[in-house]
Figure 1 (cartoon, protein in one colour):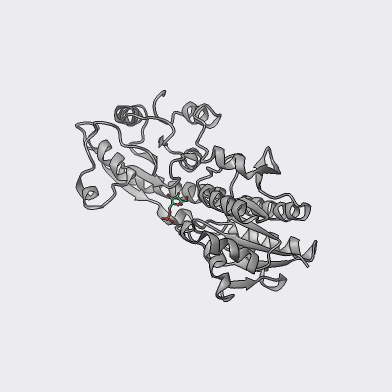
Figure 2: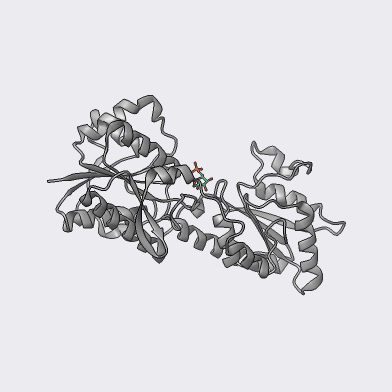
Amino acid sequence: RKRIGILTSGGDCPGLNAVIRAVVSHATLTYDWEVLGISYATQGLLEAKATTLKMHGLDLRGIDPLLSMGGTILGTINKGDTLAHTSEIIAGYQMLELDALIGIGGDGSLSILHNLAHQGNWNFIGVPKTIDNDVALTERSVGFDTAVNTITNALNSLTFTAASHDRVMIVEVMGRKAGHLALQAGIAGGADVILIPEIPYSIEGVCQHLAQLRDRSWRKFAIVVVAEGIEAVKGSADCDGLCQLTTKCGMGQYIADQISHCSAEKIETRVSVLGHIQRGGIPSALDRLVATAFGKTAVDLAAQGKYDQMVAWQNGQVVAVPLQEVMLQSPSPVDANGYLVPIARSLGIYVGNGF
Ligand code: F6P
């Protein structure tokens, strides 16, 4: 009987459990394989030598609630020191007598697992997950859609309070150095300004746009979405006020400080940093669908002996792409010339220079 392992690695996101469920269902029902859940990513492989306590025997009885559960029942780590323990981690795969390993991770985790697989001769298959949606060669990663929905809902809520007080609401969203979350949720949530790392912006551009909004329309409020990974504009005054008290000035606060100096007329700003709420929550229907299709396909790849691949979403289909290629092209940024930026601009949203 074949035995496959599954682990989740890197930051959690909604939909991980749905992948686990699909893998267990398909591997068990279709192929009659045993599935071993490995706890806390490579940590579980590292400890396989000493203890099996962190291993979960997953079977059909335990998997039903997983479809709608956020997080990961296997636990995860995103700061493991794999380099110091490479040989023990590699040995963990052999000790557990795995025939194949399915790893669910973002570009960082997949790269680490891909390297370990090469060194250890593992039969490895990757499944992309990240709210940042920056894994290359796949249009969708598990978790992204739910995070876009979470941010969109937050923007809707903030619009009411912004409108009531004539305030400019600045909303800082995650995404590391990619602006996919900010751009897609910003459009869906009716933002007036969207600042993303891929497109340079100017403080004057933001100020002018806000002034035009105030002059042209009856509404005196605005919603500004700021991707956490944008850079401060060279020469701009540093963050002041509260922001100086923190060790790291968040870019939402930075932009709020700049906006408050836009004009002689006082603009009242408030900053919301959405933080890890973007990673939690119940997976959306689309994320469950993507997770299920990815899990099923990963098992099929193992059945066909096609390893060193990542399952990917391309043109509405699930395909397999070489992990090596994914690593070379990740992280994948927003295409500033793609279709979404012009759509945003045609709606009158300021998305940085070029408006
Ligand atoms: O990569 C996912 C992500 O949520 C990023 O958007 C964010 O910058 C980072 O992880 C936060 O990581 P941590 O969980 O370590 O705070």
